[in-house]
Image 1 (cartoon, rainbow, N blue to C red):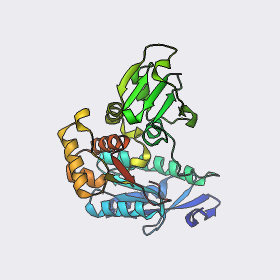
Image 2: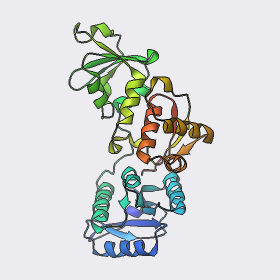
Image 3: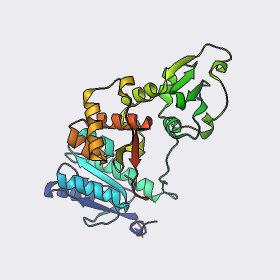
Image 4: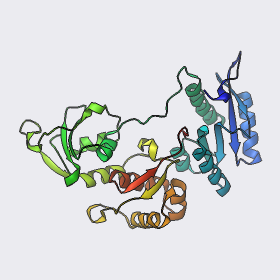
Length: 299
């Protein structure tokens, strides 16, 4: 356990809260709010905290730079963005301006509970069907959904076969799965559904289209914030429904070599949600590489 979690008193554990790039008004609001909050943990404001939890105002360039540096340092359990941009805050699990006591209390209560339980949460990835399809060991395998539907995936041929309706598979792509739901069996498409006529679909079209409609709060965590991205292949634009700005984003990323989420949004002028949909779709198609954050950094 980190040293900043060890201090305890009769009122409960003491946790330190750092800040970066906050103006005097928001800093005063933060101090006043912390003084009146009634939480199981005792949160102590420490502007120079070099680990633990930290709030960063990301509406100015200085704050955005600090945000990246803090997350990438690997020393902080949570880096909380403070912004007037609702979508930026939503993606980063942060706080919206103007700072409200109720929102701050809810977030600190959540983090405090995570940090003071007998076993703090481990930074482990939850296996998802989309990731199994994208990174699985086998080019051809079967997938069984909880409802019992079977699908046969042929990554090498860019095809997916199934009789349960493609909508069911699309709805399950970003849900947690049990590893046994993915099986490298030699089952053939015609055997699906005990002879029931199967349907054939384009795998890349399925993955891309599902990524474009995914809500922000269901985006796989590994794609968010701390990762940098590198384009590692050409997207099959002729096979995909897309907008001109998505191709422009791909061209920018190709020229930049690598970039993070904030830079992509700022440089292209696209909304964060649309940038994430592009990133997710390109990653699922194997055309984008995630440059992972240092071990131990969780945002």
